[in-house]
Amino acid sequence: MTSFPALRMRRTRTHAWSRALVAETVLTPSDLIWPLFIAEGQGVEEPIAALPGVSRWSVDRIAERARQARDLGIPCIALFPNTPGGLRTDDAREALNADNLICRAVRAAKEAAPEVGILTDVALDPYTTHGHDGIVDESGYVLNDRTSAVLVEQALVQAGAGADIVAPSDMMDGRVAAIRGALEADGRHNVQIMAYAAKYASAFYGPFRDAVGSRGLLKGDKKTYQMDYANAEEALREVALDLAEGADTVMVKPGLPYLDIVRRVRERFEVPVFAYQVSGEYAMIEAAVAVGAGDRDALVLETLTAFKRAGAAGVLTYHAPLAARLLGA
Ligand code: PBG
Image 1 (cartoon, protein in one colour):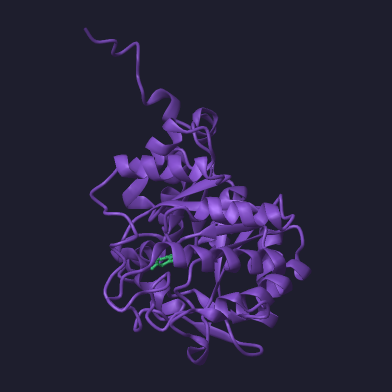
Image 2 (cartoon, helix red, strand yellow):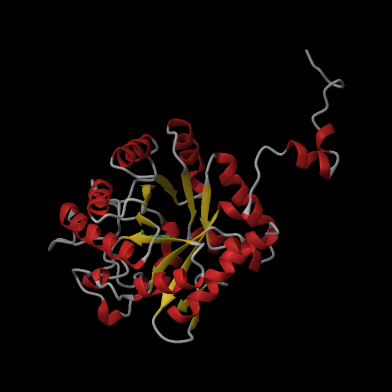
């Protein structure tokens, strides 16, 4: 039995106005979170070779970026520090310095554009000499509870500087509850927690590790804390736990190869789920553009819309300013 020619699927695709009318998914600048890297110094812009088009900015120049986000309609920026080598230690104590690079950047961005939300990463990798997200023992194993105790302090320091969302990206067990409890005790009831709930041990983080200066330092891999990319059910357990512990929103990371996870989390839980289109994904698009294999604007809009179609409430992407411009804020 065929309904052709009474039914022609191409009919509604014939004109742009009609395609717009039946579009199921709409991407807007308000779906975007823009990750930015911070460097020490004055008046500094340091291009990152592995991320063509992305730079580290000194604290005095982060104000311009925050205002740019506001003017483009990007609701939130995420800040990541490239801690000077001399301040990296085994115990990551610089992460707890209320005047460290990230805290100064948070204050500068807040002052420049108070209406833009600020997300900070809770994890120790930009501060350790071994490049791991936590405190390691003699064998190099990342110690869960000792790390969690430091992450709590780190989150309080970031919230104290003005971070609106603290985002634990470390994958320690129990850290969301610990951080939530500490924020409440500190009177910071409205500081949100976006949990990197399903974060996979991925080969797509390479350029980010260059950007925060941890690539050359990293000993071994992160497989004892980040998830195995073979697993999906386990991601649902991670999300359930982080929600039970008090996460306001959850994140799936990386992005494009994990849209199945985004979809499943979205269907299982009534919670905003975010996706991180990570550095290696950005680099992949830029590499394709560089060899003439695709059109940047088209690739960016298609991939970002795919996240929304999969069920994401929003996307962290280094292409945020470009996408916001294309979407005509
Ligand atoms: C740190 C962190 C990483 C990313 C975000 N936070 C790297 C890692 O876990 O090694 C990756 C982001 C990206 O690749 O764009 N815990």
